[in-house]
Length: 103
Image (cartoon, rainbow, N blue to C red; front, side, top):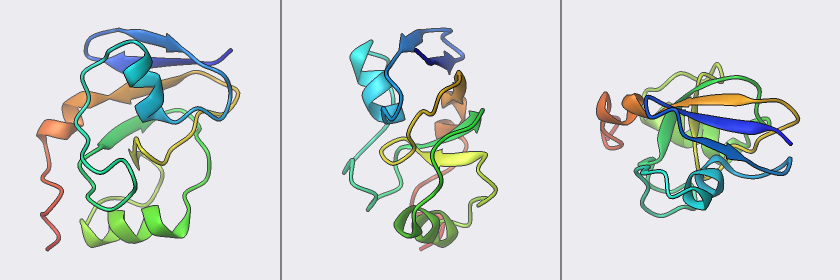
């Protein structure tokens, strides 16, 4: 099973393929900022190293509205799903931006 490694804590969540990052965090009680959990608020934005499910239009639209990168390095934990390989999630990013910075 793929692993989600949360930085800077180093906590690891081993999850089945297709698990959302937010679910992986909750499974191991990893602190992660989130609000709506349904791609409406942007609070759960994280920096990613690794390959995740492709972005859907609603996630792209929200990231664009927040003036964040659409290159796949920034994802919403409530939308991004783990594929078949390990992923690193940088939670420090959540202190670097505000979800309403694009408003």
